[in-house]
Length: 236
Image (cartoon, rainbow, N blue to C red; front, side):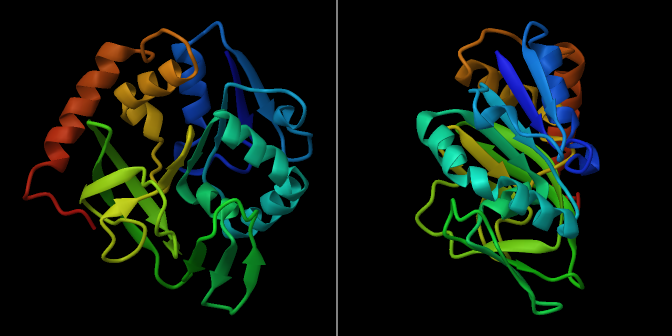
């Protein structure tokens, strides 16, 4: 299995850089490609089994978009071919049609792989817990975001929200899935927090294996799940 972690030096906020590392520890035989922003991604000519990209600052989003713009058609080709891509936090914003900053009035053209618009309010950060379900799995995580997704109807959502924020205020779904392209605003990082989802991704890559430190990870997951299902716990 080949894992590519994109731009971890600038796209690893909130611990998201550990999603790729956790996959690698779960499948130690995997080849790891840690691509810097100044380097040509391995996926440009090779075919990784899993690509991970995590949270970044809003100014970094613009740099990443320009870095990946020449490779947008290649990314679309990989998505159509079933390559696993995990975009967490605000990394999903870069795949949109546009990112509209309502605070300063600027508009950044995204990669256009999705038709949605992201609306960013730098004076209105949302920070809270999330509990949702994905294909029978309970998913727990956290959000810390300025941007919200609009105009994304008709897509397959990643999560059905049980508690917490969806794509935007009032939405009961969160993120999106296209083939094996998983985009979610959850961070924390999501894979160590959800070992069963980690194992699902490993199986999608055609590998057999358990999440690293599974007993400890499952015990932590069960404690967090008990907390998140407790009606007394606030989610914002």
